[in-house]
Amino acid sequence: MGNYFAKFSAFGSFAPARILTNKDLEKMVDTSDEWIRSRTGMVERHIASKEEAASDLAYQAALNAIEASDVKYKDIDMIVVATISGDHPFPSTACLLQHKLGLKNVPAFDVSAGCTGFIYACDVARQYVENGGASNVLAVGVEILTKITNWTDRNTCVLFGDAAGAAVISRAEPTDISRIIDIKLDADGSMGDYLIQMAGGSRLPASHETVDANQHTVYMEGNRIFKSAVKSMYASSDELLRRNNLTSADVDWVIPHQANLRIIEALADKMKVPINKVIINIQKYGNTSSATVPLATDEAIRSKKIRRGDILLLTSFGAGLTWGSVLARY
Ligand code: ACO
Image (cartoon, rainbow, N blue to C red; front, side, top):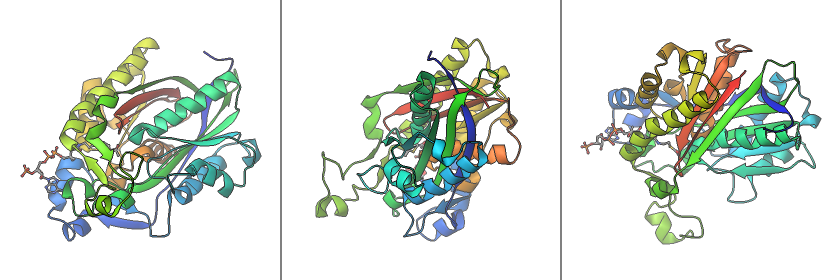
């Protein structure tokens, strides 16, 4: 426990304008609207334009989050961006975002934890705020996975969409009802090969061969991931609740990673949480990786489902493999 408490001041999000429907995908690969709906719950997803990169989406989401908070731009003192599809391998997307926001002399860095990235970013932000190292941290989850998607592979290309979600994580006054109660992170690198962008790093640098073999796109063993997804999100959520002497009945809203509706329903079932207490928007956005959780949270706040004082459980899993959960009073 640090010297201070941290809280979610506000959320923001952004999705690119272009929409790709299941019907559109039927024309691109051997799939059907019926298969995609029944196996994933997805109906449409937003796709970035040729000109849009991760920092552009992150910028819009960050603006929305800052505007929804009572924090002034100049008081943001750290930027953490969770992404696996940043503008460039380097510099970090966080530095590009810092420049776009016109902020100077504040630390800015990326974290890489696949779809769990936003949960990891929240924990980094919380640690700094609780220890007094920062007062208002911008935590962003942004992904343009559609630019690293193999559009001839029906196993993966129907799943992903592009978006950004952001939160301003601030120091909480002792009188504030809002508070990040606890966060649990986890990882198991032995399962890294199940979900991987094989080439483009120091293991397999970019070459004509890697491009021809489609090794710069997302490779996923969907079945294996599916099995560990429910187990891992349940495990971290259950531990968080237990160690804070709460049960799932105390939670007002579960906001899970939006990777597959069947995974979300299985998690709700295992946690004994009624499905109407689970925030679901997978039908509109598909899997936007590290953006799903802040995007779904932001939408639920703006539609007044989530209200100040509600107990939130944010949970995700993804490449690494990684998983984790955040327990907070909004
Ligand atoms: N359209 C039609 N048929 C398809 C499609 C498609 N788009 N995709 C796969 N199929 C076929 C397969 O070829 C297979 O056919 P076969 O039996 O003739 O071989 C059949 O459907 C069943 O395939 P499965 O892979 O067993 O389908 P499953 O029910 O497991 O659904 C899915 C696949 C949706 C990928 C599921 O496994 C899943 O959601 N997994 C988790 C994905 C995930 O959460 N990833 C982590 C986050 S991503 C990140 O971190 C970047």
